[in-house]
Image (cartoon, rainbow, N blue to C red; front, top):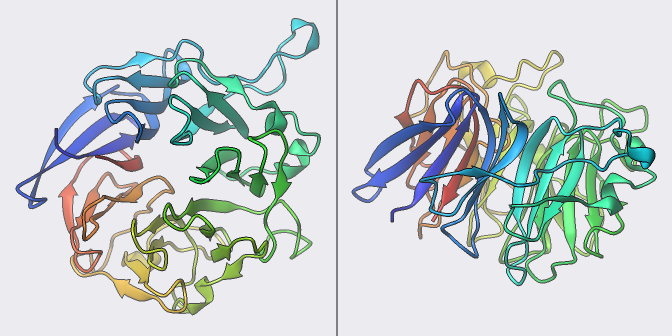
Length: 370
């Protein structure tokens, strides 16, 4: 079975598979035509298993499972849902979107985490079939203050990270709210936002209320985290607790605002981002209609523009936080999907690009499955 790029869109799920050493590509689908697909993730412990977070017209927000590499799907028996309030009446919070999926630790076969809108954290221990709320976060006395505001797209819990050395050590991010850390499997949480700017808050050094767009942890160097934030690009080296703004090394006319941030699978100093226009009115388009990827190979000390093959003008799309990824090749391939329904790919680390697919619906996620 060949590798696959899974493409979640506003109107269904598509797959893209390479031919002839990534020189050609074959598109298949759609599955779930007409339904919103937020995230598709392969289980690295059981590669035949895929989970999909969706908002379907007839089932609402839910999780779909495939046990045969995406050929067939069935709905989870108990999708993520907040607990009922005392006395049996419905709690004010209700899951509107299952927005993010993360496999659990390698030692915990069948464990998964899900993030929702409004901000909620859920866990499954049976491969995604049944989900339970993580009460330590969802019922935390500070939760309402941590996530007191919402982005134009709503309140989102995303970037759930499991430390590969310790299944009890977790990170998550909320837009808007910030980054939070747990060292006890989610029973308790603390903010981890020191050093991050919050230009939209009265307190520029607030402990929470930040807007992380995407947070990643390097699998081979788990103490190294990167963050693409509403207010810049950051790096954190644990056990430190203050993020360093590495986006200040970006060209000033480009800035350091965007949604996705992608790690080199083997090199913790190498990161790719795709900036967008984040000026006062937040147009959320490529800057001046000239999209480009930027790479650092020295952990953010310097950045280089990569735009060969990308449109030179009049390309006004955005790339969302889940819509950019790398593959596992020795020289990693990079892929991103746009709000204009295109998938772009590079097989040489971003040095050159070509359009692999056009005319899809708005793309929400692009993920790699081995």
